[in-house]
Image 1 (tube, helix red, strand yellow):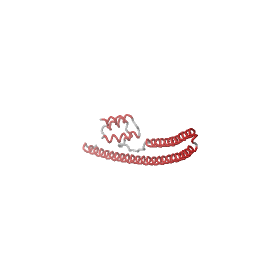
Image 2 (spheres, one colour):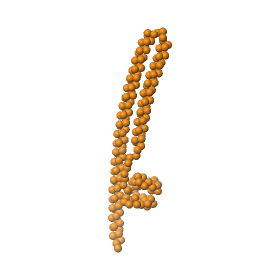
Image 3 (tube, helix red, strand yellow):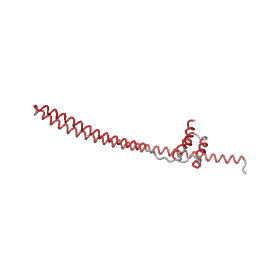
Image 4 (tube, helix red, strand yellow):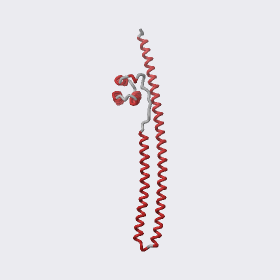
Length: 192
């Protein structure tokens, strides 16, 4: 049978070992989480940059298309202006033709802009979907034997934990068992 001082010393050693293990696990989980968050941010920036470059290219293409259409329409305007000089008596007919050219030009511009708007909306939607995808996170148990504890046992042990340790516990719980009792208790612990 152990003496009281040897029992205290044994308990103290176990407590120190558990504390060190917990610190190692928390540090590892925090480092892993920070690294994955950084990687996800860098990936998002790369995707956003790539999409912006693609949109810029599409805008340039659409602009060039509009310039060509405008140049073609302008050529027809010049032709009609010459015809107007030659046919002074048919002024009404020429005015009607000019109105038709204006409508065709505006219609061509609107079609080009609508096409560009549709491509921009599609790209933005695609980026929005990519940005909303959750990053895969892998975390370790907050302390030894955690997975074997019932929700009630976890809540009891949680009362003795520091706020940062409770945060790590919540991350692990959400990634694994998602027990409502544990998550409610963690929320209450954080607000106290």
